[in-house]
Length: 230
Image (tube, rainbow, N blue to C red; front, side):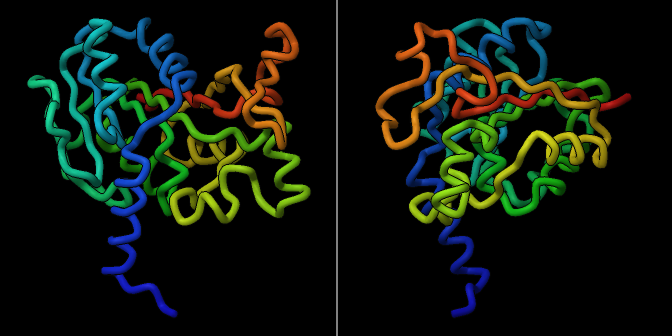
């Protein structure tokens, strides 16, 4: 059966409403630890803000109060007063002027979108020269992801139970190529250092190793950091 444009929009909205844009605590903490070092009161966009959990943390920490949030779902009821909300399908440009933001944060969003290169071109358009881009996504290069690919036919976050929410799996090489092609610096990769053991997902590698097992092979998520080139 052919998926019509209307059906596609309904699928995207249903996916967003189901997850509500909520990410795990290790992801939030990894992002917040990085954002603590940025220039205070910068113009920040949370791209894929969901119900606003992360942006509330950003405001509570005093990182900045100049925040715009974008998501396909409507604005949350208890949105902080200083947040400007843009309701938009993030597969398309969000309709703000060029060079609008100093920082863009996008947690666990890129894997939901159809065309990561188009998304990065949009990031490049709306970031100011030298602006920072922070993206998180499931880590496709962990032991758990490799085991799932070998025995299940796809990375763990992209098997049938996660579809059609998760549709775009990206590795470090993909991000390096995309950044190079869309006007960004070579990306840095930071891992959450929290990762589930295959088939025993309620247990983390860190629990059984006295927190010794960290990094790429033992993290469920990765943070990608890059700057828009001048």
